[in-house]
Image (cartoon, rainbow, N blue to C red; front, top):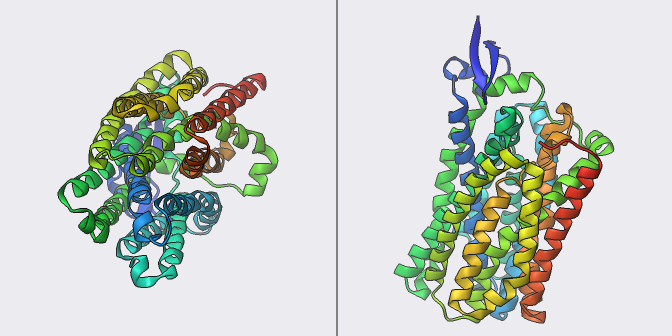
Amino acid sequence: MANPTSIDGVHVDVHEHPQTSPGARGINARDADISPGEIAIGVVIGRASEYFDFFVYAIASALVFPSVFFPYDSRLDGTLYAFAIFALAFVARPIASVAFMAVQHHFTREVKLTLALLIMGVSTAGIAFLPDYASLGTWSIVILSILRIGQGVAQGGSWDGLPSLLALNAPENKRGWYAAIGQLGAPIGFIIAAGLFAYMLTNLSQLDFLDWGWRYPFYVAFAINVVALFARLRLVTTHEYSHLLDEHQLDPVPVGELMSTQARNVIIGALAALASYALFHLVTVFPLSWISLTSQRSLAGFLQVQMVGAVLMTIGIIISGFVADRYGRRRTLGTLATMIGIFSLFAHFLIGLNETGQDAFILIGFALLGLSYGQAAGAVTANFPQRYRYTGAALTSDFAWLVGAGFAPLVALGVASNFGLAYVGVYLLSGAASSLAALSINRAWNIRDN
């Protein structure tokens, strides 16, 4: 018997299929009637857990790993080495996306997601228990690198494509709003991660923090992964999700076929978000490393300022949904890329000024990030024909992170320490220019705005 339901405001009749596929979807179909609002909450939970893992590692790379795993070198060089290892996850991510899509093709989506989150949990817990350089020598660095690659593999494998599909299946006048929902996981994850590190820095001595205190956020990350696993498995068992699967909107396609027909959409999609993704690490990770290296300022206090910035980012993401629905996602993203470009001209002055200037850089940067990042994911996802949307959106996101954000802390700290802070602004300006160029090409090709 048909079971009427709705997907983001679009009404469909979903027929119950006992055992449409093996796995959790078939087992739980009897009680999987979940509204689009509940699906959106599940998306935020899943993304928040991913970003929490992401920021726990990122903050540790700036504040902990130089001393714990690279004590034999200068603090600056140790931080650069830590950021190089940080970037490994972004290199592994697109490769893992391809590999896990093969897993999904031969098994089920539930198997793929469970395996990805299991790898993330093992990698994160492994870092928490990893002996330092003083105990294990060079092997500690090798194992840290392997575990970081494991996190990248898990991030690539955990793609479910639902944020893009929420936007694509939304009513015409609410696509920007639904696109922004999944992005809320970023500030939520940052606030929790930064709050834990700020608490540890405030309540522990420097010796205790570097000895064992920094490991606790990784323990928490492991626990959150377990919760997220069940939340996301519950999500992919819904009738709504099964319907999208049956409509072939969630099926992976061979990457060779995708790139042979949709390469330009992948490239344009990745470059269109470059300004936002570059700014992402320049207001979160890079400032922490710069302050710890060049200032006597309280790191816990600085993290608290960043947490306020993350609140502004949350507000900006929400606003971006309404603005994009009114003026169009492409126009919104282009306007914000221009504003980020203008901001880049003053970035070095604010960071190098004093504490007030640093706070202004963080708060303005986070606000711009929220407005831009809210529409950055899948900005041109609708360019892909329905058959290619799932795989195309995944690889577009992976390449955007790799090109725009993966090496941003390493490059920013490297150029700032060797050539001056002005070059950090140049780096950010290049990202804004790339985004504007990509959006202009997209418009010239007369590809419809999503």
